[in-house]
Length: 448
Image (cartoon, rainbow, N blue to C red; front, side, top):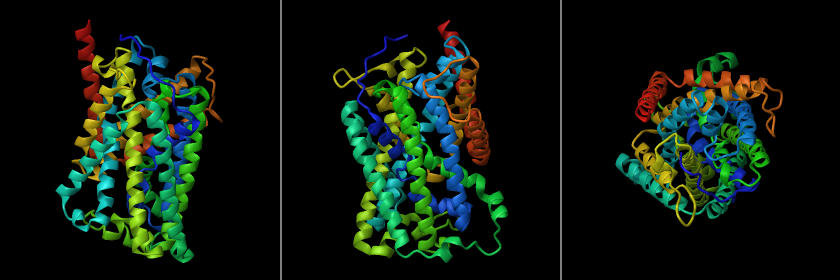
C-alpha cells in the first residue's frame, strides 16, 4: 500500500454544491429534452423528470449517509472497501467499481464534449454537416478541459463556483424565453390517441434512463472527500441542495418548452436523427422569443454550461482511481500527486484521455452505455453497502430520512433503469463487470 499523499481541504459548501450542480446540469437537459419528448409525448414528459428527481433524491440520501461516515477521496470506492472489508469482498467490490468507472465515467464526460460540439453547430452551420468536424471540436474541448483542471484544488473550486452560476443562468434564460410566448393549450394537451397510463407504459423506461443521465452528478463532491472542508456535514447538505435546485430548474424548463412550440417539432425523426429545432432546442426557443442576437448569446451560455459539466465531471471521476491506488487496490502509478500543486495528476490525465476517445461515439450510445455500466456497482452495490453498514450497527453523522424506504426505492429504480437501457447497453455493463472480475482474480493470484 502506498503512503497516503497529503491533499488540500479547499472545497466548502458553496464549492461542493457548485461541483455537483455543474456536473448535473451541463449540456444534458438542453440536448436530451427532445429525446425525453420522443419517449414520453407532450405533458407526459414531465413525469419522466419528476420521477427522475425522486430517484435522484432517494439515491442521493444513500450518498449522503455513506459520505458523512466515510468522507474520503474516491466516494463509492471507499464506502465499498470499508463496509465490506478490505481483506475479501470489499476489495473485490472496490476494484470492480474502479474498473467499471474507467469504462463508464469517461463516457459521461465525453457526452458533454459531444453536446458542446453539436450546439456549436448553431453558430457555425457548416459544422453541423461535418461529422468529422464535430468530432474534432469535441476532442478540442476535451483537451481544454483537461488543461483547465491541471491546477491546485483551491483555484479549481473557485472556477467551479463561477461555472455553476453560469449553468444556472443558462437554464433560467432558456426558461424565461420559453415562457415569453407560453401556450397552456400546447403544454397540457396530449397527442391524439395517447393516454396517461398508456404513454407511461410505452416510454417511461427510456425517458427515465435519459432523465437519470441528466441528474447524475449529485455525488461528485463525495469523490473529493479529502479535499472538502468539514465533509461530514458539507457533503450531505450539498447533495440535497443540488438535487432540489436542479430538479426545480429541469421541471420548470420542460414545462416552458412544452408551451413554447409544438413538441412534435423537436422529437427524433424516423431514422433516429434530430430535426434542426431538436439539435439546438435552447437556441431556437430564445430566437423565437427575443431574436437572433439573443439566441447567439444564449448559445454561448450553453457552450459555457457544457464546458462546466465536463469540468466538474472529469474533476470528480479522476479521484476514484487515485483513491484506489493509494490503498494498493489499483495500479500504483495512479496514486501520484503533483509535487507542487498537490492534486492527482496522473489519474486526471488518464481519465481525461479516455474521455477524448469517447468522443468517437454518438450521444445515444454514450448515454445508454454509461448508464448500464455505471449502475451495477456504482449504484446497486452502494445501496447494498448502506444496508450492510446499518446491519453492522454503525451510526453515521448523517442518517437517511425514513430509512429504509428511500434506499429501497433507489434500488428498485436503478434496477428498472438498467433493464430499460437496451440489450446492447446491458451486455456492455455485464461484460465489463465480468471482465473486471477475471482481471481481479488474475491480479490477486499474481500478487500471491
